[in-house]
Every structure is written in structure tokens, then in C-alpha cells.
Image (cartoon, rainbow over all chains, first blue to last red; front, side, top):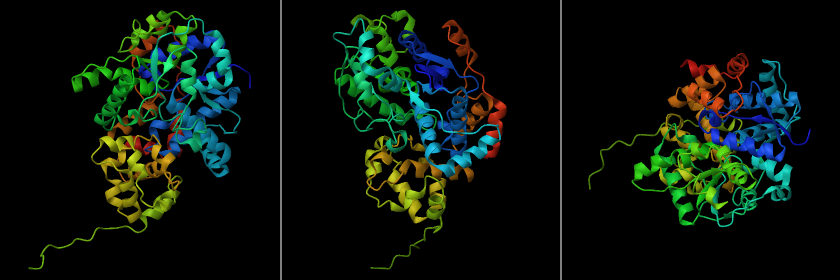
Length: 292
Length: 170
């Protein structure tokens, strides 16, 4: 497969509500010569429908993988849910012959066949594995000097380990390393790898808000000036819903939440104005930009 | 002491239920659960919910409490974070067993309304969420490429063959 060229799987949550993530990631890609090829006719990765119909989830994910096989490019996505689902289904279809036959029966209806010739990656995997930390370090022009942040990894890029095949979900390190090349210090806090609860917001909105609130408090108590996310759904919970949490619990949290590409962009000479920071509920444009 | 006059009602159990679940892909490991409770103790949702206990759902399934499990609202509180699956000392795929139970609950007519909405969104637009015109205009303002249009014919065919279409009809 050609180096530095990927089929860009946008997913649903980003166009629905989180444009700042797409905008900043595209800027970072331009800077790093990562070529994003648009992906016509893609569909929902399938994850939101898994609870009601597992086979439809498999069919939706497999169709996306087939589109990538046709153009001969690996998939890159910014969303943990999409990355996890596409990776999981890709791996399962490659290793489970019976399942592959079943899914190919479905795909036959639309004139497609899963062959097993593509890969699906999350954007941070492309940065850490394909570009590499050494190369990234070299393009950091203005590292942060006094910024302390914390990371929220999210679930679906890590769990279940057996099916995703990336990092140890109990102690993941890649995002921390990516953060530290920007000069920012990445702090530890309790239950770092715990879920934000976003997937059940449509069923019960109280519990996810409590989970998110607890995490925001822990991050602040650790002394972080911002939280770094790599998933649009997690970002919705921590940033978009933060004013809701503040109102509901009668407290001020005021913790900026940045997508990882925004943090990186600020140190590689990309204009902060081009990162859509003003789209966030908690304004990071002054607080964080001042540090670089 | 007088004898109690209260009638003890037997719980209706379905001995085939566990086999029904174990026969579905993802449900196989139900049989090896020895009820240690690691799943519930590590579950982020269980910490904040009074009712959601994955260990309990697994036990009720093993015992054969079919209608109670399938009609239960708490079945839908799993966030699918897979912490339980990764930590289970018996390698029970807890989250997958719960998914099998949910899929079956849907077939029996139990489904939270949010899923019907998402199903209609996917079949009507290709996206799970309704992306408004305002969002599309904003994409233009930000000079983002136009949002790709889905192949709705393909999606309708996949929905039909996987029996997904039924969800939108109920």
C-alpha cells in the first residue's frame, strides 16, 4: 500500500457535532504530508446498531472495509468507536473463515466481497506507528514549556484487547508519548482508562454525566490545565456537556478539552485561528494558546 | 408459632435459555462464569447505577429467567466499554453475552426508542445521527469537503438480508 496515503473514514459523530476535530486533524495531516483521500459512499461503521442487530453491524463495517479494499488504501479514522469497530471486524473476518463466508453472503447482495486486503487505523496509530515519534519530534517548533495536561484514552481503541490488538488497556502509553513530544507534561490520575459513558446517553443521561463529572474533577485535582481526547464522543461528554454538568451540580469546572491534533498543531507552527478552538464550549483559545 | 400462610410462588425458569444464548456467536462463554463478580466491581456504569449489575444479569441468564432478563430495562445500560470482558478471570465475554441478550430482546419486542431513531437515520442517510442543514452550511464555511452521500440502495439491501429492516417497522 502507498505510504502516507489513507482513505479518510469520517464517521457520524464528527459531522454531527464535532467539526473542530476534523478541521485540526486535516491541518496536521497537511503539515505532515499525510494524504487523506475522501471516502465516497461510506456508511456508519455499525457500532451504534450492534446492541440491536449484530449482523447488521458486521455488514455495515464489512461494506466500509470493502470500499477500502477496492481503492487499495488503508482506512484512517479519528473516532475510537469507528476505529475499534473496523479493526475488530477486519481482524475477525480475516481469521474466522465461517464468519467471513456468512458476511460475504450478505455482501453478495450488493455486489461486494470481503477479501482481507486492507487495514483500519486510528489517527494516533498513524502518528505513532507510521510517522513515528522521532519524526514528529523534529517538526515540533515551539514546544509547550509549562503546560500540564491529562489524557482520556476512551474505550473502543483499547478494549477488548484480544479483538482490537493495540495497547494494554490497563496501562496504555502511546497517547502519553504523543502528548509529551509537544513539551506538555501528561499527568496521571485515578481511573484514567475508565469510560465516559457516551454510548448510553440515549438510554440514561444521568449516569454518563456523573461519570464525566467525576473524571473532570479528578483531572483538575491532579493539576491538569486541559484534558486531551482522541474520540469525538468522549469530547462531546467532556466539553459539550461540561456546562450542563456545571448547571446540574451547581459548580464551576471550566476545564478546556482539546483534541490531540489541536495540541500538536499548536507546537508545529499551525495558526491557532485555524484550529476551530472557538467551536468548543470551554474556550481554550486563550488559556492554552498562551502556553506556546 | 403458627405456620406461615404465605404461598411461595415458584419462579418460572426456562432451562433452555442458557443454551439458546450459548448457541449464538458471542454467547458461548456464558457457561464458564463462576459468579466471582469481577465484572460488576470494575463496571463504570454499576458504580453509578442502583440497578445495573452485569454479574446478576449473567446469573439470571444461567438460571433461565428468560422473560425477566429480556424485558429488563437494565439490560440496556451496558456502555459496551468491554472492561468486564478484558478483566474476567474466566475469559467470559461478558459484554458480548449482554449484546446477544439485547439482540434477542429486540426480537421479542423489547427495544428502547433511541435505536429505532438511529436505525431510521442509518437507512435514511447512512449516518447514525441526523446531520442538520446548519451543520452542512458550517462545513462550507470551514471549507471542509462536502459530506459524502451514502449508497442507500446498498444499505436497504443489507438491512433486508440481516433482518434489520424489521426494527424500523415495529
